[in-house]
Amino acid sequence: MNKPILPLMLCVLLSGCLNVGSGFRVPPDASARWKLCNEDKIYPAKKTPPEASRAKRDEMLRQMNLYGQRKLDDMFSCGYDPIGGGTSRADACVRKKDWYRSGKDIYPENKIYEQCQHD
Image 1 (cartoon, rainbow, N blue to C red):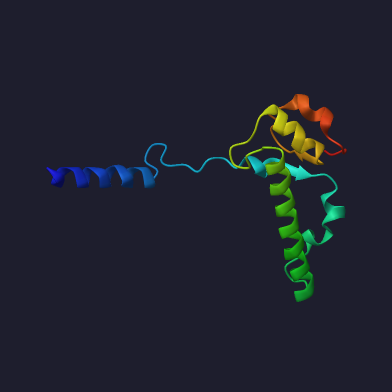
Image 2 (image 1 turned 90 degrees about the vertical axis):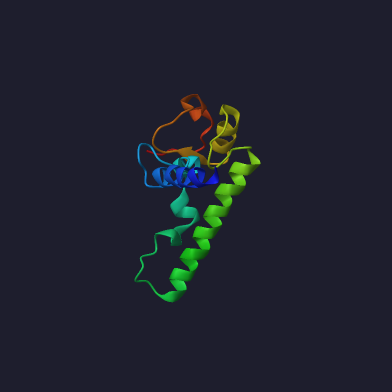
């Protein structure tokens, strides 16, 4: 009885992993579309080229970590899930913390809460 079940389970697993049909997909990252107002002024070393000195690259990594931590802290404090997204209220809260959406905006009515001018 167990002999036909194991090969069947392996076939199902492999077909999902090999992306036959739709396959197993990673959920979209909702935090990827958020940009910080005045990011270049607050974290200027983020644009450091790879051929820069060791000290400048270390400063770039430090500022990138600070930027990422600020993004997560602001989102979690508003109740916004960085992977799954959030409600209109959480979206408005994140915008009040100097973040704006780039690309498709699912809550355009919350643009009134943005604190900066951007593209």
